[in-house]
Image (cartoon, rainbow, N blue to C red; front, side, top):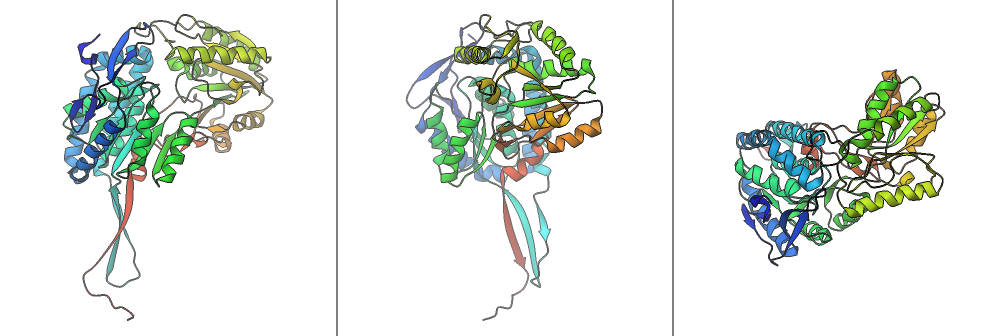
Length: 488
């Protein structure tokens, strides 16, 4: 084990500290099963201490000069860019992330930090017209305060970074709760990186916890009156529960939840491009991203040719050790996830689906799996299944494909492959999704884009260009240079 990981602790008020209760837990490598890190198992006392540190740091940080914030963020970008190999190795060992997706995450985060460095110089308000003679009115954006950021494991570097960088850039302080499956790359790594870049003590705090104990930390953060925003990325089930709790405390929440994302392949699509897009969109990071294509809806006219080529490509994807540069399909995150994938595929087949490839674990990996004819009663048909499992279904027309796509209770992202991009744009307006990519598959993100879904896929938008709206308060301010006449 790397000595740095022998005791991954909380980061509170600029100090690395153990849990008040003294407990630790072992985070294991999903590929080898060996201990990756020994991690502090925090509880309510640690969470409250982190909020205290963030609250105390908020005043000075919210008033800090834009040049200082920009310098810190640019320095962090340079530090991360210079540590690619180390970060890539740790993403593989902590989350089973293969090299391709690790590089995607690192590239995204370096770009995100550089873009965030411009936010301190963004306009912070506007002059408003007033009908009161002699009154000058302003609408000013002010940092909201302490942000509770709850991040998942699956794209740990990106999703933790996205949760903290933009709020910090616009003057907030943050308490980050990473997943127990990614306490380092989704937590401690960011705390150490930004501290080294010069971030003042208390601006970013990280509290880790043992498996099964996320709820007590999240509830403590949301219930604390000093926390003014909640940012959550994760499952719809958990997001609904946290939103209900936040509502009781009148906290604004930004939610990015699950997806059951469709890829529409129309009759006029370039078949080579469609197959390439579908293979990537369904199987990148072993299907363990919220954006992955779960349903490929193909026009009946081209379905046989598309399906045959897609299945052939899927079956040939290399799987195994995520640290090997040629690996595409690494291990799923844990034994529970592996057994869930196997159970849901088996259920679909028992209910009448046809299995075209895959379907059973290979060691700690689940191979690329393609099914057709999945009945509506099967869990695969209606619930998000995190792994390299995809359904292919036929549509009689483009209109039918849109109707099938919209039948889902989710609405995160979608793709449309067509020979007519203008037709694709027309269809995009009809798709009930927060994000639609024409002539591309659903797995896309850029730091400056408005990332988020509709329906059961969440509310609010992440993205550097939208941070000011989500993580600031609008304050109306007036000023007069002389007395105002009053009616009595």
